[in-house]
Image (tube, rainbow, N blue to C red; front, top):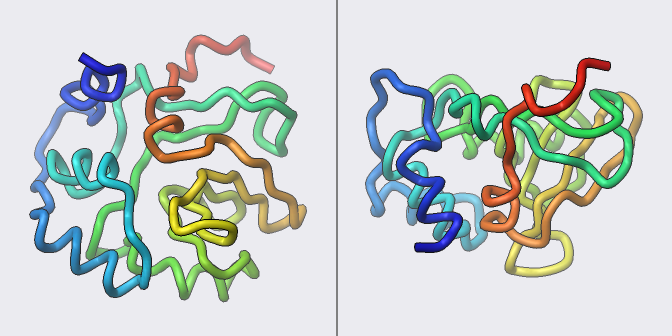
Length: 158
């Protein structure tokens, strides 16, 4: 069993949540004009966005960010539809002056984690700080990003 396969059953925080169908996931990719990662579809097929479990709510960084010297938060993953969604990525890119060709996975209006399609049809995952106009590559793929998630509690308080 791969690390991603081990992560899937425990990725979401317990509680109610509706799954996203494969058809809806494919439609979202077409609407965004990109090929969304299959692993993202697998997670959204379990629950269409929401709070992630505490054992995978942070990602270690190779450089300090405005959030922390050691990591970035990843406590929520956007789904498709609803109040804030992956489908809002074009609007969010314009509103927050983010680069084009991003699909926002998580964020709070000032900082974002996004699939980055600027260099390839296979997206990397990048951290964006809209206020500081900075970015930090996190992982070469969504799968590598998901497999690299760790508990935020594993980092010392700063």
